[in-house]
Length: 104
Image 1 (cartoon, one colour):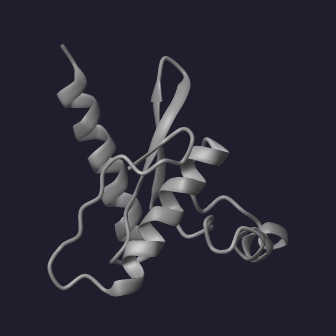
Image 2 (image 1 turned 120 degrees about the horizontal axis):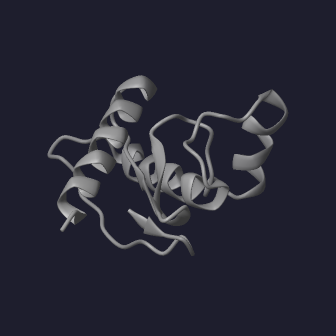
């Protein structure tokens, strides 16, 4: 999880997770926070140039979702380790759980 300035706030890794999942999950969170929308939206004109131009800090791989409060993006969650579809499903579920916990 990163905040709106892409500062890492929280990180967790499951036993047996692949080493590249660490970097990929962070890139997904960074992308969702900085673009203010879930990852996976870029067309072919940006999908490769953006990761190359940012040294891999941003990605088009699904699994990143922004965290929004009162229509303001305050950060993002990035999930990696499964297929892009699985990562997206887990990220959306995690965001839903975070919202449920935050309710008074």
